[in-house]
Amino acid sequence: NAGVTQTPKFRVLKTGQSMTLLCAQDMNHEYMYWYRQDPGMGLRLIHYSVGEGTTAKGEVPDGYNVSRLKKQNFLLGLESAAPSQTSVYFCASRTGGQEQYFGPGTRLTVT
Amino acid sequence: GENVEQHPSTLSVQEGDSAVIKCTYSDSASNYFPWYKQELGKRPQLIIDIRSNVGEKKDQRIAVTLNKTAKHFSLHITETQPEDSAVYFCAASIAGGGFKTIFGAGTRLFVKA
Image 1 (cartoon, rainbow over the protein chains, first blue to last red):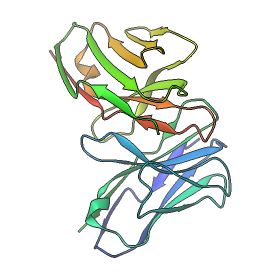
Image 2 (image 1 turned 180 degrees about the horizontal axis):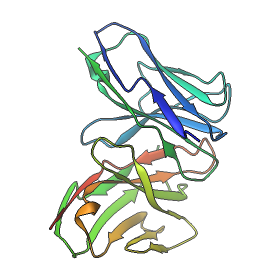
Image 3 (image 1 turned 30 degrees about the horizontal axis):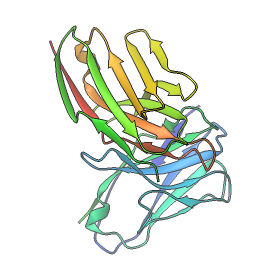
């Protein structure tokens, strides 16, 4: 099993550009999450999904959209990137009240 | 919504000493409390967790305690080793509603050899 994978690993965007981050898991997990990690602020929940076709807002959803068309994939979109979205993005998945498994992260820089 | 506060933000100990990290949470409905270790440039990894029906849990040199009344939970690492140096995050999660997990800001632990 690959577990949780994320693409791309690194990306540099100019302000106003758009991009999509892909998260994939092969563990048949129902729940998937997108977090951002900034220095000194821990991980903050952006959006999450409780199953295929569902999405919900987390702590810091503004400027991001998500989609879960297939159970194994959770996409995070930035429609018009801003420097404030420079961060490391982690995807995670889990089954019920069990351990979350994290992907390796995507380092995004917006100039 | 849930809020998790974590202290201290930085902790430096001598090898062999104990380290204690403390967290408080705000939502009494939280019932699952994981602790993660994150090494530089790596993903967070679960090291221990505790559920609200348990007061204490131990796994070798690591233990976690939970005080539901006070909404406090703590991580204890005994006989620290240099490889314990990392950032540690506490978190609180509520069953139902997607099992959203709210993280503390993290504690950077330095273990000096």
